Length: 217
Image 1 (cartoon, rainbow, N blue to C red):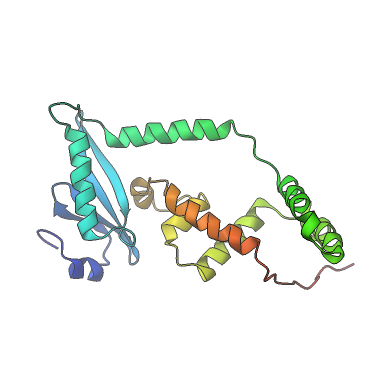
Image 2: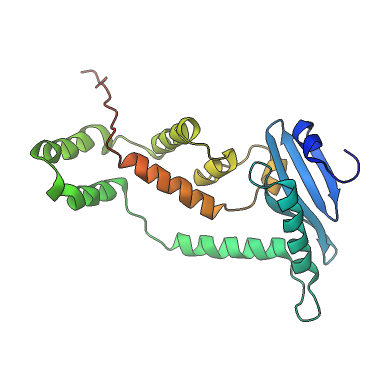
């Protein structure tokens, strides 16, 4: 693809590589369905790549607008000094991680007990007996982080239309490809909030799937 990119060419191209659109905007292809945008610039003699999002979420037109906004921030103007937007993003991410590290999260059992207390008065006698006993029998001391992640991943894949990047970010997946990891640095917080809200609705819904007890002994 020579010159400025065209929507049809972008859709058809599947060969891994970096495809320039001009003025620092690149389409990064790491696989047949893995395409993302990145803005390339230089700051203090160093090459930088600033991710602008997945092709699934960001159109060519929007990618160009995002590139223009990023260029303005990097170069600055008469009243505002330019900034290294990649370094700025890293700093913000590190600060967020530092804050999160200080937060003490409740255990699954604590969350379950809180949920039971909050809904106890509205439950029938059957539910009051069933919830605590089922959790003790099937969950407490049995479920693992991997089990939760697997359940969530299956639900997100089969029951939602959220892009792979959003689902992976919610699971804190590390990309196997170093190239993909280099460009996929966004946190996707707003999209993850929407995903987790749908997950919460699913978990608290009335349509509960009953599983057969397969334990032996």
